[in-house]
Length: 66
Image (cartoon, rainbow, N blue to C red; front, side):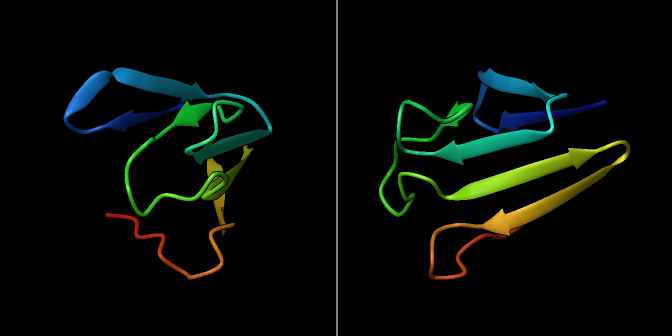
């Protein structure tokens, strides 16, 4: 099982257990990141067993995974 967490704000975290998890500025996302440069729907994560597929929804290919 995976957990997505904002580094400087550990209380803003979610377990990646659903088939899809969305990240972005809009309140309808599973993880809301309301900072400049983040789109309303920025990333969609497709959780499939032990694999996560990341789809950039921002349109400018600004998704970086560390």
